[in-house]
Image: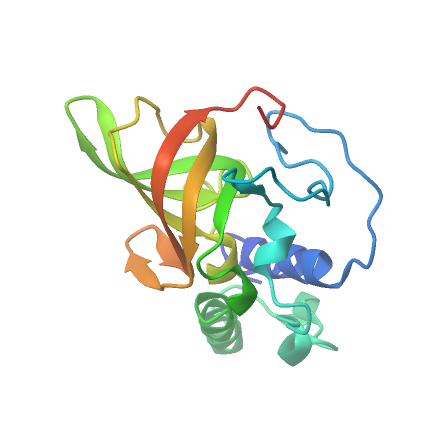
Length: 200
């Protein structure tokens, strides 16, 4: 089996499936590697305030990324097996083409996540990907496109790779292909602030 890529990619797709189909998951505690915890609060934001969202809201409810891979026995795939390479390419294609949630287009949001820098200037990050879990795109294959935000802050942000932050700005369903992964969403960030474990 392609131990270095196939399993992590399958896990990333599986995580997206879990988020897409969990009807009402039990709340989870937040931690440095899981800043989003459980579902976002259902309360409407005050007038003029961004909507606090969870990553699962970015995934269309009817999307099943594992549909094409159900019933496969990955234990039969050995290193160097061309079928493993074919399967890896197919999984990557499904991940890169993951659909976005059209209801989120144009919504002013606030969302926590981890920074994957794309561009830096004078010690500040001027363009980055925001991802939902530690190590994504750097230590492991990127998550599905609907779990990656391409962020351009209005002002450079003094953060490093995998720092945990709050991003606030208008969400757009706009795809972007970077060397670190394909993003399904874009945010021109009004603010990028250090994650403190709460929404404020």
